[in-house]
Image (cartoon, rainbow, N blue to C red; front, top):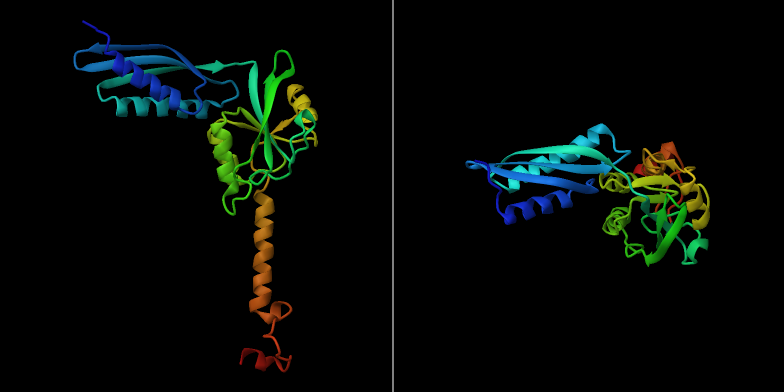
Length: 249
């Protein structure tokens, strides 16, 4: 005879499902005990644009954690459905707080502040907004990663930015945050373009090529310093230039 497990086990399963990035909602959780084993199933809702591979990764992660953390659960079936909502929370890096007239900050990790707006896609309007200081704008290293985690904790759905590095990009995407390329300078114009579906969703970081080129420039300069024959040589202060063999004395 099948019986329902205790409330404690049900709450634990709910807690696990709620903690998984990508699960927007879940319903229809059913748990039943048959002998020493517990069998369960649930219906989860993920964002509509999520590709099949990523949706199955989310499903596999739920099953893995549930069966590992609740030892009596032998089988856990997950049904996936698309999630649709009219409200979207959007973040935009800005220079100064001027409300909807704020100008976008071209930096991401070291942006001065962030604008957070709740957009109602059905009504095509911004319902409310607020601004927060970027707590990591003075961070000397890995500011992009720290800022990305800050935005994740703000539970945003999308980011509109001009630049984003590789680590930041993947951190945000792993948390199912859409990243859009900014098409203008003012927050008001950017949100209007978002509502109208005019913004391009980024599929890769904007700064990968830029960072590679910068690293190559640094490498060339280093070679010029070490190998005088490849570029202008450098000499200790007070030393005059003489025959080439004296350089290496």
